[in-house]
Length: 259
Length: 259
DNA sequence: CGCGTTCTTGCATGTTTATGCCGAATCGTG
DNA sequence: CACGATTCGGCATAAACATGCAAGAACGCG
Image 1: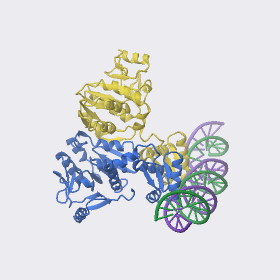
Image 2 (image 1 turned 120 degrees about the vertical axis):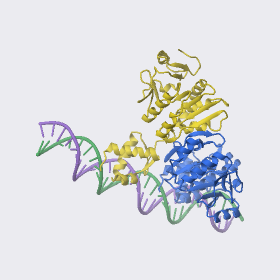
Image 3 (image 1 turned 90 degrees about the vertical axis):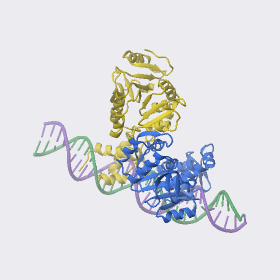
Image 4 (image 1 turned 180 degrees about the horizontal axis):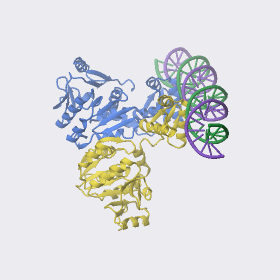
């Protein structure tokens, strides 16, 4: 059976994301094509920025391997400021679901020592942050950890979430627009978020300014449904106003509520 | 198995950060390449400022915090040594369950970059270590995280484990005696370990010397059942001999690489 | 159908890279 | 100083690479 070029390259990309590396001779053997063709593919993909070419094959571009870890270091100050503001919104003693995302990790870090909370999360990084902290009752949602999301969003995870009614869920989001509402870049991730959000009594999303106005592909939560937002200090005032006008409870990282 | 140049250099860098020093002959042996190539690597890395070249190998650049830690925290050093020895026992491509415990965390840390493995764990700290690592397929066992154990060992966790048959399980243990075998200090934890061990095709436990001869309250695994052990270099020879005589596959973590 | 175009692929070409080996120079130790 | 271990540069070789070219398939168009 012969595959199209784009199919082959997609498969190479999958293998790359899966294993972090691909070797030209191996690919040539597994596809039954010459190494020259493989190299051509890899060159094209490297030109598109999908991988990094090395002698003997290709590897992931640096930073793709640990998206969460690297994203943290970039705008730590802003993130932690946002985290503090969002953490202040969590009622003590409540059951809170922490969705995946570096912003939510920042919120977890910002919770003051000894704060009593039942934390539910599908993200190992967040769970590790909570593990061993006094006052935190921690529930981990299990399942296969999706490498792109860094959290469990498969059927096993969904089933476990169905048994839980959190008081509040902290939604991570890849984009927020006036019309599209909260949205995510990955289909399964978005589906998972929708389910968690529906199961929760309230939803809250902390959004960095770079995500404001960005239109991600998959819908998570509309702006007319009950929702709380925490935005950064420098968030576009017009957009914030417009969002608040839709009935969303908007709050700034500096502290003053708009509505 | 041939590694790319950048992979090899990344592994050297990891080992460097881990131990503060690397020796050219050791690296040559462990990678199966000539010392000349190792020296070339070290020269390149030194040119990039990633290490400092010295006679016989390389050391961290001055002004790093790691060497202090490795020299002072001897137990950490011992753990990582044990971890490396145990990590060497894991077959590439297999499904491995990582039980709770700092020793198992050390094993996870010791896995070389790009090692392909399906890791199943009930411990957020270990999951966080694996999350985002290339080549690792990660499955998280969910449930309430027992604060004393730092892992999910409740009914939800048990039910998820029942659906998995790992090729190998890495058992954490609080004590190991000739008569009692592997044992744990916490009842539920021991019960969970027994179940995981029973579900797995093979069991392996890395035991620090301070646990040898310690009799913990709750039985986990007898010494006559199929079991592999990794002991430290300075483990009591008589006891090790006696354990091996019961049919247990005993292996030592030799500290040859470090002086 | 016939023809030209485009795309893909494998092969042949020369070039670059990685590696091991060797000899001379250098370093550390007694 | 003497000796062995280590290092560096050069050299050879095999593998991987880029490039050009030609054969073949898919496609559009008259």
